[in-house]
Image (tube, helix red, strand yellow):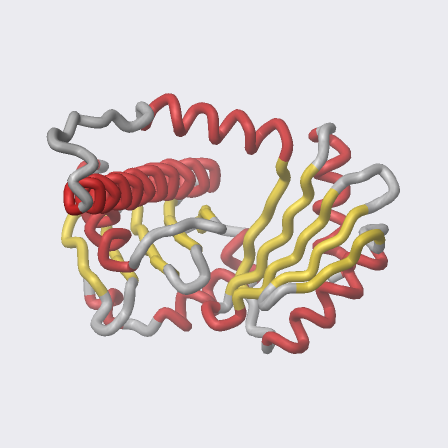
Length: 249
């Protein structure tokens, strides 16, 4: 387990290396964006989810909202996982290393979904609790009734169904600076046909094409992440446009 002391940049270099896609071990990446959470709750939930999934020797990087863990049911380790909580950008990133490519991606998606769901549930519960406290202080409520949260299983299922029906997306690592990344993102969107209603925010460029499909490229360069997204009604068209955005970037 000496590798847990290595800097995160080594993992980034591994992921962008062509060899990482050619021979095992394989890397799976899963990212949730536009989330509302704080790093401490994300780390607490991350440790719990990893532990419940069989991961061992969970280590938090010093002065960083990053977890590392390994799963072993035989030698060598079957999985290794890295969880990164980026509350400032509203992003949770999970990287899993495995000897089978589809297992790496599936495990990354599973862990990210559980961490995202539970961290969000905690956030909602605390917010509702604060509202009840305010009501009590104003003497508007004399008794507090227990409140229920949406079933995590139902929430995950509906979220996944919505994502599969409407959205195609891809995350990858980047070493580009923010200005360069946003400039290339704008060119990619224009060249890919997303030139209608072209807009910008702090870290994203977005637009719409003639068929009313929405394209978006997000540059989270502070964490070395690049995000491509296409929203529309037909899966085949979404995937084709997503690939076009990546090629033109």
